[in-house]
Length: 126
Image (cartoon, rainbow, N blue to C red; front, side, top):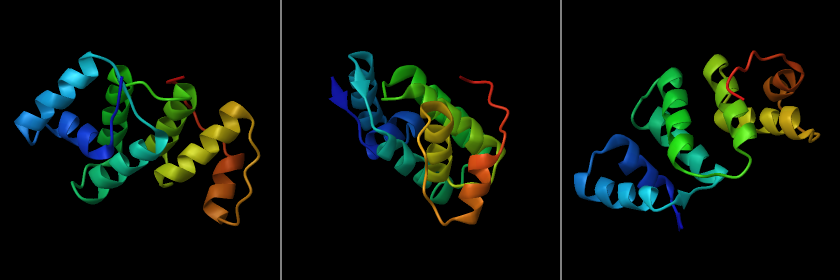
């Protein structure tokens, strides 16, 4: 099983380098996984470099999770749902998701994050 980095996932999603996309597609077919850190980088690149809007980033992430394994998929899906309906950055969405799905207490001085921790999000993709 291959651990995919952000560049591999971006080639897979964007298919902007056909040769590399084929290599990644083969790895995905044979079983692959990634980390939450990698997904955060993918979000950063898609939104910052490629200017993909939040709704499409969320859709792309959901599609990635259909093909590629990751730890805590329930929390990741929850974070994607928050990301789609808020202006929070993806890492803050992950922290809120860990709080809501895993019961972890989050210590932060970030007012926007703290507001999100107490917020009620309508998440349907659990």
